Amino acid sequence: MINKTKLALGIAATLTITGALVSPQAMAHSKAKADRVAEAANNKVDALEAQLQAMQAELRSLKADRSRSGADAGKVQELDQWMNSVKSAPKESAKSKDNLISFRGGWAHFNDNRNGTQTLEGANPTFATDRDASYYGGAIDFNVNNDLFGLMDHTSFGMELGLEYAQLGHGAPNGLAGATANINQLRINVSPKIKFMHGSKFRPWLIPAGLDINIISPPSNAITVMDTGMQFGAGAEYELLKGIVIGADSRYHKSFNSIDGVNTDGFTLGGSAGFKW
Image (cartoon, rainbow, N blue to C red; front, side, top):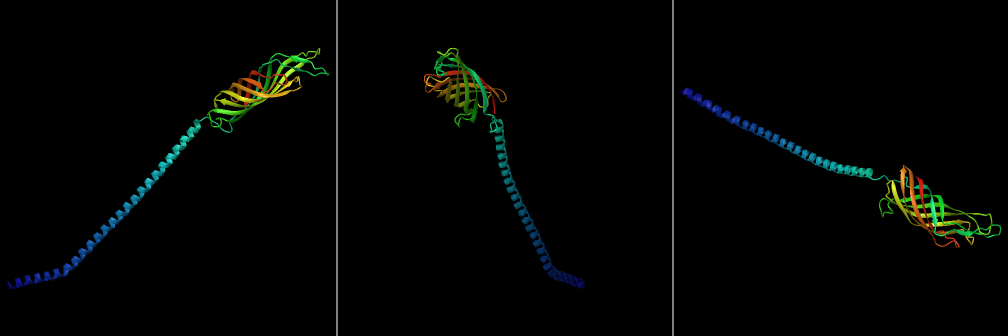
């Protein structure tokens, strides 16, 4: 009984001493393990924070890209709209054929009978004809702009340079038997010309006021052959085929002065055919 008691006491003492020796090591091991767990947790937090920052940076980049894409899309849309407007607008360029050369002819009527003096071999016989005549000639229209200097859309402004020859007939001079006078007139004009409905096949036009230079033959009683005046006109042209234009016009001619008794005032009525260039 005593031996068992001593044995138990000895075992208890041994366990107590062993526990005292083992406990600090266990505690140290537990603390090290806790430190490793904390460090691992911190590393995970740092990694998550780094990932979060990377995601935020990527998000900002995506937003910036989307903004740039939106701006680019807006620019592309504006460009498309501009191209569509250009395509739908009437074609008008420096290469377009807006000038015109035409041949004209028709009927002329003067306010007064033509009279004058024909000088032949020292004699001065006089003659007279009626008021009607035929004429033919040509003109060149030079286009300047197609918006009337910015005042009116689809309205062209140009300058016309024209030439007309009028044949009044043959007059039999008084006082000279068997002689006749070929009575004619040459008219040169420079006139501003306003054409409406640019881009259309049918285009009415008007000449508000232009310059006339009249040359007559035979000469006047004072041997004068030339005077100046004005013309006013209106008409229309139609592009029958591409580049081929027909037209009709009426004009009134008013001289500043008579040519020593010869009056060249009157009007013309005729047609024309021309080509754009």
